[in-house]
Amino acid sequence: MSKFLIKQAFAEAMDLHKQNRFEEAKVIYNKILTVNESEPNAHHLISLVFMAEGDFENAKKHIEIAIDKAPNQAVFHSNYGSLLHSMGEHQLAINAIKASLKLDKKLFQSYYSLGIVYTDMQEHEKAVENYIKALELNSESSEAHNNLANLFSYLNNSEAEYHYEKTITLTPNEIYPRLNMSNYLIKNNKFEDSLKHLNEIIEMGLESKEVYNSLGVSYKGLNDDKNASKMFKKSLELDPNFTLAQKNLDSLD
Image (tube, rainbow, N blue to C red; front, side):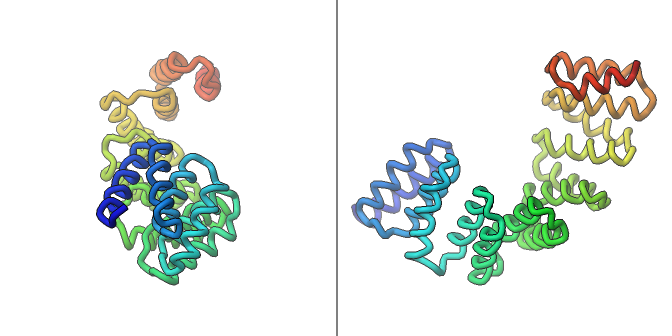
């Protein structure tokens, strides 16, 4: 296989991966490895496919080969850290991600991944610090803004509102940033503002049981039990087993 054909094969496999056509992507990566079993990029990329499938054992095998063959590739170490985190090896994950930052101090995904790992470890100060570093490198990352907003909301930090607004601006057609923002506003008794965001979701045609439940909570907060009851009932129409909406409806009686 010529260099040109290998380059084409990589492009095709990566495209298949993006389409979640994992088996087809693996076939191509394995063909590349048949030609050159030491090709680090092929080992790295096939490990990401295995990781997406939840096959952590094979993902770990291939990414460790990739790192062994190309130890100075920062992104290999970063993705190895993400894999270890998925396997529940939090401290080993941190070590791997920090190793990537020794090779490339401006690798956005490493700071972002550290934010996720530290959040799961309940080390919130470190999580915030790393999300902020990630956003300094890529201020347009909706995922980083959203994760930081959720963390600030959990910590009752008013900066959550700013980061939810940024997430909504960056992903205007997504339901969950608006829903997360509305729930933050509800938690802070800003019921009129939460209604605004929730009604925007409905206008977008993105209704869900969670949206109607949050609408009910907002109306209840404004002492409008009539509309609150309507919203809880709509939530239950979408899912009769949604216990939270049923509990909220019962609380009006």
